[in-house]
Amino acid sequence: MIIANLVVADIARSVAFYRDIVGLDVMMVLGPGQTMIDGPDVPSDAVFATLQFGGSQLMLQTAEYALSVVPDAPTGPCWIYIRDMNPTPVLERHDGPPLKGPELTWYGMQEVHLRDPDGHIVCVGTPEGAAPR
Image (cartoon, rainbow, N blue to C red; front, side):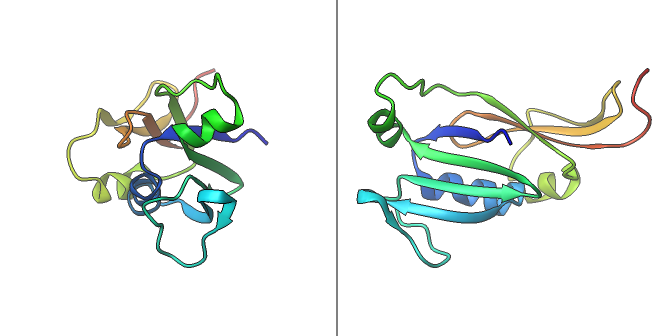
């Protein structure tokens, strides 16, 4: 399994985006001093979280926490792709226009591209139609 690990400025804000807009489920949240957070509320001082969709996971961590684990960790934005998720309900929950889409791509995927609160690009797509040969 490959798991994306994004550096974010605010765990609570990012969990809200990936949970409430994208539709991922929260697996765990870590507070300062590596304390596990119980319950649905994510405190403002959380440093790490793991979310899931199907068999995939997404990790979120603050820059400070990432740099405490790997001192030279990159903290810039990246691009993630979530396959087999219908983009229509995601777009309905998103406030504002998408970066791109929704569209049916030449390779048979219905996709929409969004930007998360930290500038990471999130593409959500599901197969619709035949893939090219």
